[in-house]
Structure formats: C-alpha cells, structure tokens
Amino acid sequence: MSDPQKTFPVSWEELHRNAKALAWRLIEQGPFNGIVAVTRGGLVPAAIIARELDVRLIDTVCMQSYSDDHAQGQIKVLKEVPGDGEGWLIIDDLVDTGRTARVVRDMLPKAHFATIYAKPSGRPLVDTFVTEVSQDTWIYFPWDIELQFAQPIAKQKRG
Ligand SMILES: O=P(O)(O)OC[C@H]1O[C@H](OP(=O)(O)OP(=O)(O)O)[C@H](O)[C@@H]1O
Ligand SMILES: Nc1nc2[nH]cnc2c(=O)[nH]1
Ligand SMILES: [Mg+2]
Image 1: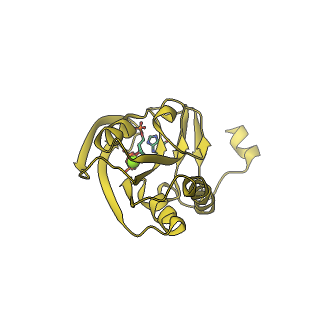
Image 2: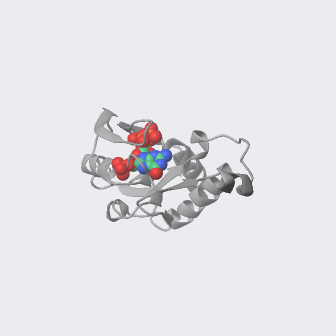
Image 3: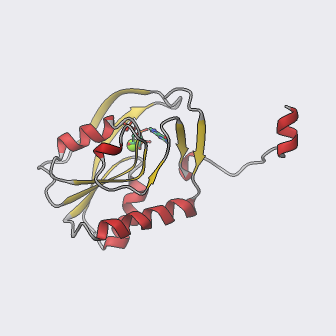
C-alpha cells in the first residue's frame, strides 16, 4: 500500500492494553512451549505476551518486506526456526496482505499464529487477533512516531 487513505496512530498505553487483551485470548489456547517473535514488529508484543503467559523461551523469525514508503517488496527471510512449530506461539504486530504470515505459516505449519491487529486480506491467516482495521489504513506503532506540535483544527482547515 503506497498511499493509504487513513492513518491509525497507536500509543504505548494502547499497544500495552491490546497486547494484554491478546494474552487473555491466548491463555485459553495454551500452554505453549515457547514464543516465536516475527521481527521486528512482533518483538515488543511478544515481550508483553511472554510476561503475561509466563513464557521464557523466545525465538525469532527474522523477515524484511516493507520499505519506509509503505511499499511491500520481495519478502526476505533472514533467519528461520527449525521444526514444524508444534506447541509454539507465533506473534507478530499485524497482518496486512497476509504475505508475511503465509511465509511464516509455511515455515511453522503447526504453530498458533497471533497478531494484535488484522486487516481483512490477512485475517484468514491469523488464528487469534484483537482489533480489525480497514485495508486502506496504515497503522503507526509507538516506535514509529514521536510527540510533536499539531496545528489547531481551525488553522488546518484554512490550509
Ligand atoms: O501482511 P503483510 O502485508 O505481509 O504485512 C505485515 C508485516 O509487515 C510489517 O513488517 P515489516 O516487513 O514492515 O517489517 P518490521 O516488522 O521490521 O517493521 C508487520 O510487522 C508485519 O510483519
Ligand atoms: N507500521 C505498519 N507496518 C505495516 N506493514 C504492513 N502494513 C503495515 C501497517 O499498517 N503499519
Ligand atoms: Mg514485521
């Protein structure tokens, strides 16, 4: 998606609340042997969920696909996890097109795949998620953004 229609900024508090909401759903699905975080976006959610589910065994699948202009290129797998994923929980921050999820699921077909956010195209690839956002929305995570001055609405309207 190179020109998303809407943006959806997420604060640290909101992310923490949503990650805990995901943990409440996942506690019913476990117990899990360990967590596989999909880098980099899955790292912070995985840390929060590991704390809530009392999981200490964490591995990573290292992936690269989107560039800074929100365009998705070829997915590169920089690091894999051996095995079929049985008893493991995979955590990513979101599914968008579902292409990243497809690659990870093919790698670990027996794992449980969970994300905090899901867009409609990727939703069928996720076992458990918390919040659905529309396909034309770009989510900004707390680590993507910083506090800054915002124009009053009246000034924004005058242009
Ligand atoms: O469903 P898709 O269309 O494949 O998109 C979802 C993936 O895109 C983002 O990762 P990204 O490749 O931007 O890297 P990052 O996790 O390092 O931010 C996000 O963290 C997901 O992993
Ligand atoms: N930060 C972020 N990364 C993405 N990768 C694919 N879709 C998104 C999105 O909406 N936000
Ligand atoms: Mg990612």
